[in-house]
Image (tube, rainbow, N blue to C red; front, top):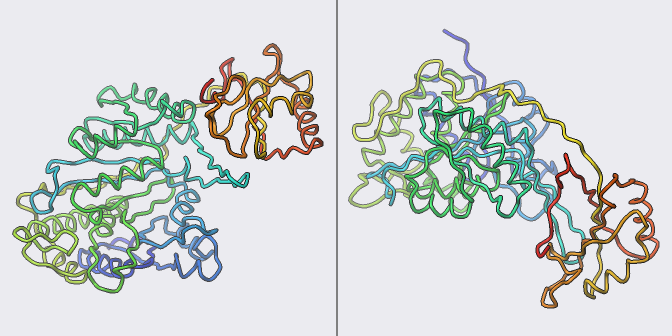
Length: 483
């Protein structure tokens, strides 16, 4: 008998304890060889004053087992609490979020009976880095971080996943018609890596039309790879149009650790009623078993689940008269699944997992960064100032700018208001002043510091500075709308 594989579990909040109990019963009955450690996370930990929702002992368990099966948690909204999901993914380097979205026609109602799409979502960067500021009375800011290494890791993972799972095409969703630098980096990286996989089709779509097509004709997609925020949104769309978001599980994969969870939330309004569908967490546990090399148990559970869906044993969220045969609660759902262990579906495609198969590709090698000549060529100063026009602002600061810098543009909310601004432009109390060097030699940082000092002495409230660089002669910053 091989040693049991240690895993860490958390029952979470809301319906979490109910669906975790059901999932553990199924895992035990399947013969999965596990040594379970339990930790407490989520709302009760937040309420004890622990801002990240997780005690040090919980982190120790995760670092020891390196495998985490997690029920949903409730993250307090609008306060000083950071999402625990985001914290775990970033701290443990879980860069790839994999969400299979499959239709189970005709047993679960859907308008898309042949849908079978996998969303591969970048998990650590983008707006989910959670870097936000309030800068003035009227303006807040969120920082969108996209890196070359982070983009390369998730894109290469998507192509490796497609190849290992005999998928035909990978589609990237971006918005680089607007965010030309950040999303543009992801797009360029996608094109470079796609060229290394000539056996797999590839395409790029703007995320808004891509999401519309996903909702309308998901059959045209196979594997979708995208940035963090877009991936979160479209994976919920994709899961819902299969018939229910409650049926989808996901894996969060890193080089050292992995986390498995349902994609739905803690659903506190139905907590304690015994009606929650445990399918998302059960199917996440199947992904976990494949990850740790227990393919036999994974296949047994997955096929029993498919057989039960065929047999019409459904929870209330997917129950439909004329199709479903029995409406069951959480515990009875698990009991019926256990009764079918060893059976296979007749109409739905049976699951098949090879012994030794891995659902992750640890240690993806990254290309060396090509170093470019970086030159400081200007600075943006952001001011908190209420009232006036772009012309008024330009006149006020003209005498404060040294000879080494020249004011070239003023914008408000990203829209150019000087020179030649439109009088109709609505302005807030957040102004950006762009000052550039002569274009021939690098700007001396001391000139920027001196200018900043004169602004401060004049009573202007500088809330942020952003250095402007060129890389091999190309500008590393965006223009304002209207430039």
